[in-house]
Image 1: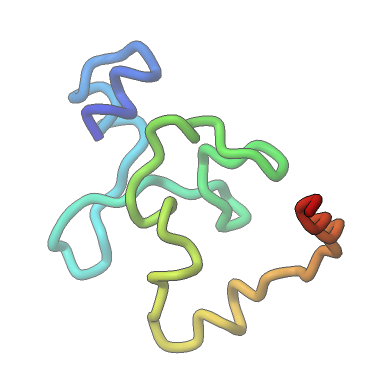
Image 2: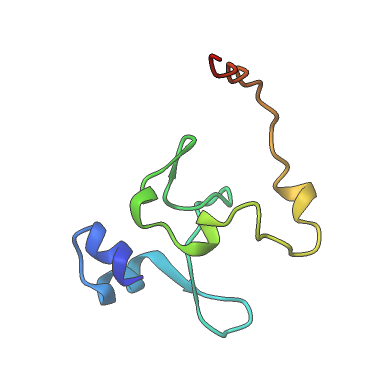
Length: 88
C-alpha cells in the first residue's frame, strides 16, 4: 500500500481510505474494484500502477490457485512470432 500511495503522490492513510476495502475474511485490506468487478487500476488492458503493483498481481496467473480460478481467469491464446534460430 505504501509503494502505491507514494507512486500516486498521496499519503498512505489517504490511499487506504480511498482505494482499499476490508477483505471478506476481515483479515486485511484489498484494493477496491470497479463496479464491473475489474481492478480499479486496470485501464483497458494496462495496469496504471504496473511499476508498483502488488505481488498477487505480479504472480498472476502462475500463483493463483483458488477454487474455480480457471473458469474466471481463462487466458486468451495469442499467436507469437517464432524466434529465429541463431546463425551458425
